[in-house]
Image (cartoon, rainbow, N blue to C red):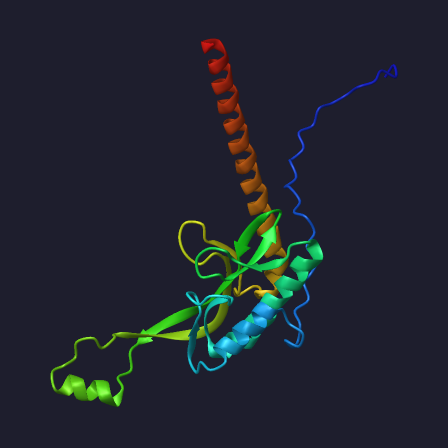
Length: 219
């Protein structure tokens, strides 16, 4: 050994990309002092005795849930509104469609909608349906019932190709625990939409420059 420096190249397994830290989002215990859209939704849905469906109702949060899940659902939405305001993302009513609840993230408005997952069971005939069936008038009687599960799904939009699941109840976690990830998804969605907007503006500017150049050559 003459003291020569010896260097070796050793393959190191690439570490997975680290996700940004996500602090828990506090969910209020009550709806006291809640946002006006939440209050309007609560007042509009409180008369329902079974399923609540406000997907086509204007000026309310769009929900498709069982009444038993209403209070929890509204508290979760209020938590998102409060956190959004803290981050500079105000709650607004959508300008198009049925004017549901939305968050304005980096200039883009995304709806917040909630549905409850169901479980399908064989339909239990009512007394009236049994009488109709006995008379040979069984047309229109459903074959299945859809029962509430209490599992809530938070979505951006609630129909079409733009619908994105933001957070949901699952066996290993609750919807409340995944609220920080809902904001990550909204911010990622806004970043992609902004990239598309910038690209569209660049194409429009290029076409305008080409048109002006063509007009100048024609003179």
